[in-house]
Length: 275
Ligand SMILES: NC(=O)c1ccc[n+]([C@@H]2O[C@H](COP(=O)([O-])OP(=O)(O)OC[C@H]3O[C@@H](n4cnc5c(N)ncnc54)[C@H](OP(=O)(O)O)[C@@H]3O)[C@@H](O)[C@H]2O)c1
Image 1: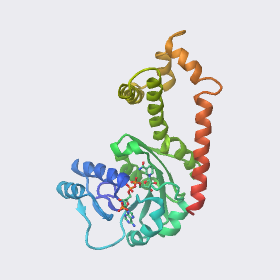
Image 2: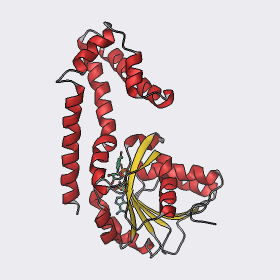
Image 3: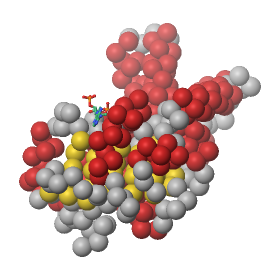
Image 4: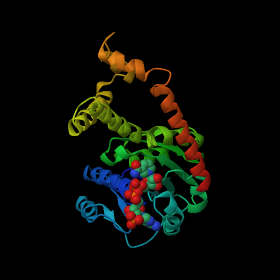
């Protein structure tokens, strides 16, 4: 069987992100794939362990030997410590895939002793398979590496290749941190409704389901956001009155421009600290 049909994987850290990956891999095995998985994680979820065994994956084989791919999903500050135990699974043919924020391709190459390394940035909707994960590969990676990486990341949702590592800080600022901006929108929309007279619970429900429903429409409707916005905006109507404020010189565009620029700056600083 090829690496794609039945990869051997060592997963380092199986918390929120690592656990979401495992849940997706279980489904892939259920549909007929193969998987040999070693999990390095102090508190691996017993239910995931049972589910892996039930679908017929090989879990934690006794020998520590090089695998097809090592997936690093610990917090960035745990990377150096985790790298020590993970190196036993790295051989000359092993690909290393990290979903850790801010850890560079250069650090991955150096600390893991691997030639082919991949740096990915998922986001929190990935925990329910509705995220987007952007990734960049070291220049020596090939087409087979790309296929394996996309296959293993797909349980988190969409997967997007990025051409240059320099742009990963921008990815972090847009899609990595992005869910927080949308949650904030739901929070402040609720507060505005409350200030206009709705009770707290009703305002929260209206705002939350509006944000969630608009997101679902954006995803399923196949129309770009500007088209959907124009569809709810009649000239001289209520939406237009609100958009006149949101699209003014002090409106959403310049605020988000400043917010994204601040996140890019912080991602660059953190990248320097984690070198
Ligand atoms: N969650 C997100 O939305 C998101 C988005 C983008 C990127 N990421 C990246 O994804 C990575 C994982 O985030 P997460 O939210 O999944 O974190 P998490 O839930 O804390 O999971 C990390 C797991 O790694 C375990 N761990 C700690 N030290 C370890 C070691 N030396 N060896 C093996 N396992 C170890 C932790 O166990 P203990 O709890 O016992 O310490 C924990 O279960 C981070 O680097 C983060 O930057 C996350």
